[in-house]
Image 1 (spheres, each protein chain N blue to C red):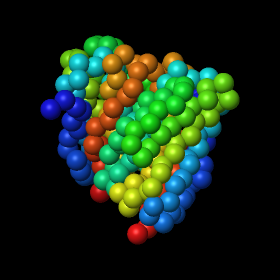
Image 2: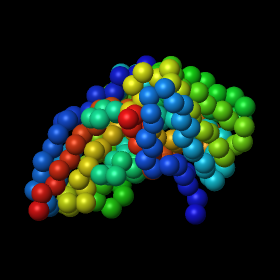
Image 3: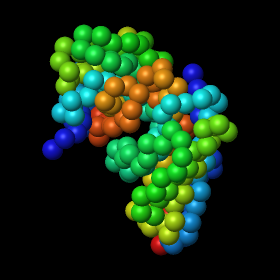
Amino acid sequence: DGGITQSPKYLFRKEGQNVTLSCEQNLNHDAMYWYRQDPGQGLRLIYYSQIVNDFQKGDIAEGYSVSREKKESFPLTVTSAQKNPTAFYLCASSRDGNTEAFFGQGTRLTVV
Amino acid sequence: GIQVEQSPPDLILQEGANSTLRCNFSDSVNNLQWFHQNPWGQLINLFYIPSGTKQNGRLSATTVATERYSLLYISSSQTTDSGVYFCAVDSGANNLFFGTGTRLTVIP
């Protein structure tokens, strides 16, 4: 099956902890993205990557970090510096950054 | 970034009715997509339509790029059409800007 897989589906974090969200794609897409969605809102871009070993900050990158060591993987770390991390996180990919984007099923992160 | 406005914010329809959702954007774009977010949160691709008209079953979309708007038409609505519909645009900055969505409820 081709697609984008995010894991876990639900994640609970204690205050002060770092957590890492996984995103894997087997679509052979060059571009990958992380978005955050808050209740009743649209999506906002956290980070994006056009090629391996390169990534750029989006609109709300503070408190987050990413890596892109492999074409198919783009993990997102939510650090303790992120003041309000409870949200729905969506990963996406597209062939080259200017074409149709496809999304994973999302990870719902809750701080307890 | 580009401003994206969607209307109406909420829409309640009787099953079988037709509807039109609108997306206005503030700058020229090279990518415009319509998504349906289901109750579990997944974003389903409906249309990739930076310009022109496309149809897929009961759904169709039109983008008039020169006037900076797009329309999504839903005909003969079904309860499974319920959810939030998002419009997202990109001007070439590798960032899809999303509107705040139209929440559609179809009642039997």
